[in-house]
Length: 581
Ligand code: ASP
Image 1 (cartoon, helix red, strand yellow):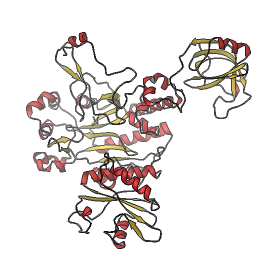
Image 2 (tube, rainbow, N blue to C red):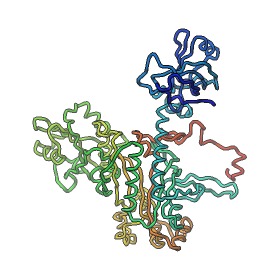
Image 3 (cartoon, rainbow, N blue to C red):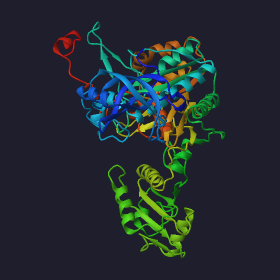
Image 4 (cartoon, helix red, strand yellow):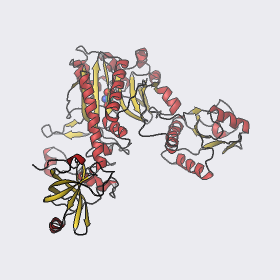
């Protein structure tokens, strides 16, 4: 038997027992002629005590960090107890030991506070994984997955696998493709999601499907995107939007309870896309804090205030940073620089300080008298001591910028506590989005999402496309979209109309999605569903914004696996076999 106990389980009540432990050497401390070793495994750390004779033997092996050893000995009470360690009351008086394997000196310290940089830790991910902090993250991931699977099982869902070597399933990204050796010059695509298969499962009569599934999307990598990631993917038949939201709201609360022991009795609010944009400037509002947007009536044609920067703007919008009137010149300059960064793209920031004495100080007080400043401040519900921050310019850019500024101020003011969880549904998304660059309409969610019945007729009127709303919804948690879905189109003619609206002629639609259109001829039930970003959900529950840490072997921000050094070139023989040049 390699071990009788783990390194995390021995307590006072084990004192006097003989034990055998196996694990990694975390720390070696020579203490005169004796040695203390901290031994680590997945479950914790236990202190080992080696007497003079055993210390000599240890030294012959030049025992160092990360050696794998097995020790036999007696559990004894510790003289210097460590209340911060679960096993801190005891130690093992070692009677014999065996070195199971030696270790090179690790390239970074295997501690929560490590000295290893990101890339180095990714290169030696197997060592990084030994750190406690990472064990906790992967354990949480498992717990979330278990809670979720239990719930889906209780609700009578079947987990069904769908294939990876397929034809394109569009979710708005590029496909990863796999060349076929047997069919030279032809390629499979890896699924961006199992969307079409789950719809076909509904046609097949499996009315409650789910799957924990890998999805692959070849996107320009932004920070914290992974080219392969995991979804909780679901679909149901004979449901309307409310049925789907009700079920997934229950699932969300179940996971919070099971993994964080948090009760979430209140119903998740439902906010329309339009309202989210108006109040928060984006479609995934962080509702842990207020600081909502105030659109000021100083745009073109609304009020000629004599300040031509406002007059020329499509949008003048403000937030109220409560209690920030005391910001210094330097702090305000720093905020201005922040909004001027290329990622935000504003040309400047206007502020109104609401002084404690009832007066106003503003960066534009040349143009506005105290009364007008007061009117603007009041419109933002600003009181004495508050600071109004105003951005103006082009509609889309400015709305995005103020929403970023709001989050930035929320962080700065400590209003985005990662241990607080606030979720909502965003509903009534537009069906289409206009692609300015190519001047055509694209599906905002995906081409299989149904328009609201009352807007269906507008599919025939191009100038109405911008107004068509969809039965589509997102689940938003702490300012992050953790899931999205829709009620699907289940009638062939409507699906054909949709493809046409997206600029696909009949031939192309048949070539790409003929199998789906055909399936719709054989009794397709009304259906809908959603998918959750599982990695992101785990990260948020773990109090982190970074999904990478919650994946055992992630890619870096450039989409590389730095440990395997992938992607990599293939040799000429393999290329020839695949018919590639
Ligand atoms: N397939 C969609 C996605 O990956 C989710 C859904 O519509 O169910 O975003």
